[in-house]
Length: 421
Image 1: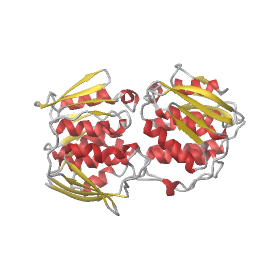
Image 2 (image 1 turned 90 degrees about the vertical axis):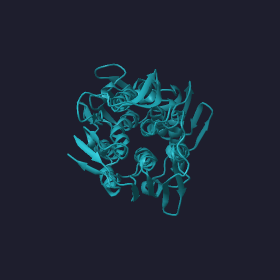
Image 3 (image 1 turned 60 degrees about the vertical axis):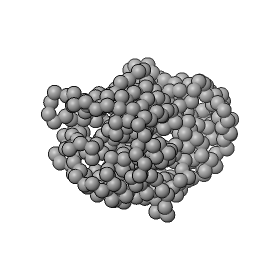
Image 4 (image 1 turned 90 degrees about the horizontal axis):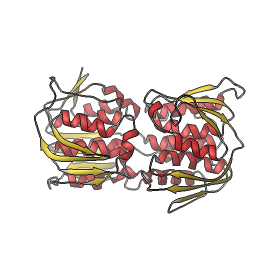
């Protein structure tokens, strides 16, 4: 358990954000599928990216005659699970892909069904629809037409998309239903195109021609992580004054989370792009009294924004949260539990979160009140800035930030946050 405090009135700091793991993990898969040699340089301190890099190296160097099944353990890295399931379907060998206890509760059936419809040899080890999966890779797997429910996870779609160019006859993906996290599909499309893929994406159809990938310069295409920037927008919103430079962020980005400046202009934060990055300051205009937002295109921002609104006493209704149910934890219930525990008025209706804009005394019997992180990096980082609004905030598992932002606590220390066991 760690106690987070900050007694500074004005936050003045420069932050070097981690590189986007969403971009890095896609580029690592694309580079692997291009046939390029494995990289021997560490791309990121993020555990998710390290897992992807390490497992791709393992997959590329394993003895393909191993009939007992080589285990590929992704831990709690959901992106790695989805992307490598597709990669293993065309990689010679007998594979068992699995993960943490929570990972084995996260559905993967829509992706496996789509791959099986193309001829992939995939079965389930324990519980149908969930990892572990048993895969016999077929490098001659053909493409064709597949249909996929676009309302479950955009990562299923991205995993299939990246296979498209290396499949005989290419791939046509028909997206069924409402598309969620569409910005991530567009990200995958743009990164594939930078590597030479020929794609036509219009309406609910993605057409990918057979071809080859060019080896990509991953670091040349990488960007600082807009998702990680969300927690610094929180800090700027809570501080009495702020001058926070987020190095390297640019107005033009393949990341859908670059919508943050538009969101936070309603919550009391000014954003100005400079030659060095994005400068955050407190706005002279007060935050709005009520704010409603649909997170369908940017679900990874939900925790930071909802915590911000709760702490500022902003009433609101937040939708587009369906995918939060199957993340590292059920993030909808986690937000309700911890915000309620801290005394903020919050309710849940199906997959919507409603804030009353009111604050009650702490509703938890123990003292101090400890925020449970649920083995979820974004829970820890979204609640930490509350130390500016309260005398202190306690987190039960602060080290979980290593999944996406290992330097988070060091950067917070630069902003005057004290972290004590």
